[in-house]
Image (cartoon, rainbow, N blue to C red; front, side):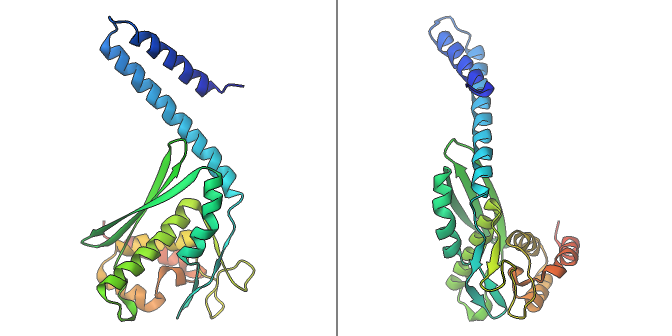
Amino acid sequence: MESTSTAESTAIIQVIERAALNPDVDIDKMERLLQMQERVMDRQAMMAYSAAMAAMQTELPSIEERGQTNNGCYATLEDIVDTVRPIMQKHGFAVSFRIQTQERGIQITGVLMHKDGHREETSMLLPADMSGNKNAVQAFGSSTSYGKRYVLSALLNITTRGQDDNGNASTKAGLKTVTAFQAGQIQRLISQCPATTQEWFSGKYGSAVQVPYSDFDKLRASLTKRAVK
């Protein structure tokens, strides 16, 4: 059965085709018809994106945290991509990234595209990761990889789990840590804070992914107050 939006699109196309055959057609009227058709197509693309996303969400698994730092574990970008790529392709999705260097850091933007034309994007601004005596190139690569992990996780609402904790992300000390989405929220706030706040955060937590789950609400409120508007 033909959907209402498809029938509407077909009807508009037919009107445009008839108008195009008329040498006396009003150009303004033709432009309005074309704009109307574009709006209908955009609505159809958004509906298709939403339906495909809902179907894909039921198949996306929790990603195992196999990467390690001195403070805990995390799901690597390679593991995330290898896991979600075939599922994304099955449902007509693809992802791309834009990397921009700015005065305040490195901005990573993820774009999630659907085959019918609709796309969504989200961005994260990160300082260069100079931990562990990295040089400038290594710092850029580390921050870029970090940003891609959390931007992709936010776009797909991905969850991660420790190797041996039955789905509860934890540090080596056994504390439950924030989810990937929450870590992304924290990192966005940190990127908007003064350097002194960023240094305090690094000294206390190391990175957003290492923040204990129990600290999330209080930390988010504190960072929101300190963020530069």
